[in-house]
Length: 87
Image (cartoon, rainbow, N blue to C red):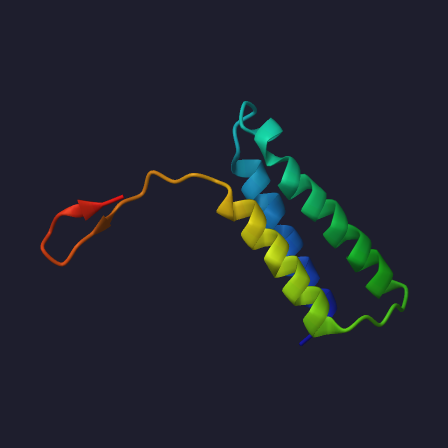
């Protein structure tokens, strides 16, 4: 597991998600901005030689992603086997 690469991928994912948001929804993305800041700090620390536990850092960052995206509401529905929809 390359920690620097994993942090870069997560950072790019969040940046892409934020770029897709319209201006009115950005105030609701504060948690994503906080996580993005945290990832940037971690990336800088790794770049200058810090050697944190890669698995722990990645798991912590993924939990942050889950927490941020878990708060977003979705109107998606899934088809049941009988052909109806469920929320």
